[in-house]
Length: 186
Ligand SMILES: [Zn+2]
Image (tube, rainbow, N blue to C red; front, side):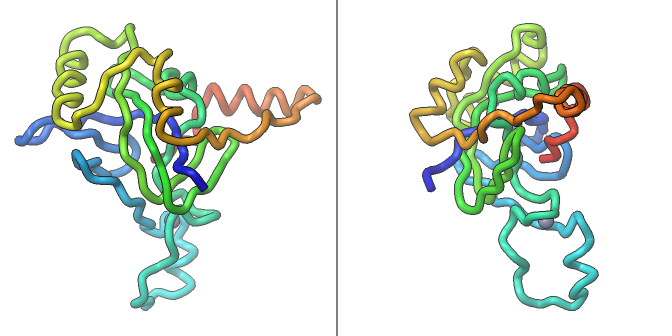
């Protein structure tokens, strides 16, 4: 299986040594020059309950039925929609164990490939942080419309075929999910 390409957003974590990319919805800092490895904190609770005194390392994330793993969208457009004033977006490469979902995937290992700017949020401090992040991580900063072509040089998109939703309830469910953006939890 070739590495997967995906698109995601990060929070900017200002540390004494400079800015770092951090996952927006959980505590995970992406260190420069090192692949991030997913950890399972038994978010579902099921595994912990099943064996509270387990000493062996648990199964490799991302685990089916859990929320662990490093998240990325299949499409750059989905990532752009998720950017807001506190976040930056970009492309990632993921490998190891991969769980493919309709909207994106969860991976075991990932590293950033490029950062991008969203024109509406390029004012002031975000623009300056983006330039410093690009320097710290040695990453290019690309226009979001060029990200997908750039990422294709490194891996493969695992986007599944479009959902069959001929009936209106299926279409409604898809559009509601898009509006709420509930899938991305990394
Ligand atoms: Zn888990």
